[in-house]
Length: 337
Image (cartoon, rainbow, N blue to C red):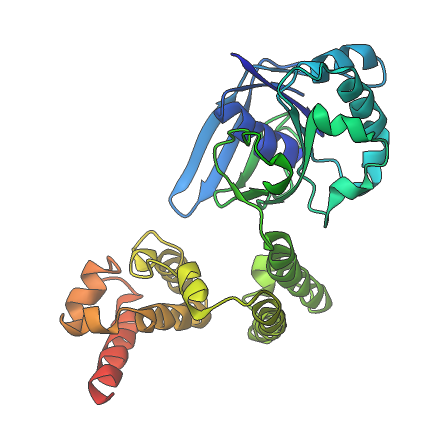
């Protein structure tokens, strides 16, 4: 393996997100087990990947070894939080300072979700820019509390996003990391949606004796409050970043696919109904998805065909009558329009 990455921070995000993508992109990751598992959880089940070709170095006891590794690395990444940057910055600075100026510049990418975290690294010299490129990053992947017996294995959600600021690279090639996209205003949008919505649900849930965020969002009052919170933040994001209607439609792309039997709306709705729980909020979302772009498409089919073909539901299933009623309502509204 010709490419090498040095990563600071072997927590859940470091192992399950950053090292995972570096490993899949062909990097040797320095981060004493010979392998560990990353387990993705989605509506379709779980998928396991084995992470190999890595090793760990303790910067307190083997600082010189770490410096030598950074000197020859292609990428240096960090996922340790703002307060810990001051501990690793001097080591990185020493290593970059000793790096040959003839070598292709290394990439120092901060993967902590901090606005402009690179500016917190004060132990840099101007000529370091000849030897390295310093880029801000934002990452997005939900990692729940891990089982105490999991050791290095990490279980996390399927969805992810990692954005890197390309501007510091100028004419130099941006390092190839599979799954990484262009850095934009993504960090602020992420904080204002994922973080804000999650925190609001947690705070309301705590005060109404809900154990999990999932439980909290089954409470109509809490769900309504969270929706109002996100409505406020959405207004700000749209106004501040000029997101167009087309951009909003991009977020909701392929709504018919997302109404499939094993997808994010029908599957949980079906399970809730079978357990005797309310799923009205999910079914409201199903109706909105049908109205999103597809009223014309489903108008050409019978309601029964839509429920069976699009949603994969059988007449014998408990959810079938409710979804059938929604389809009929959407079709009727289109005929009246």
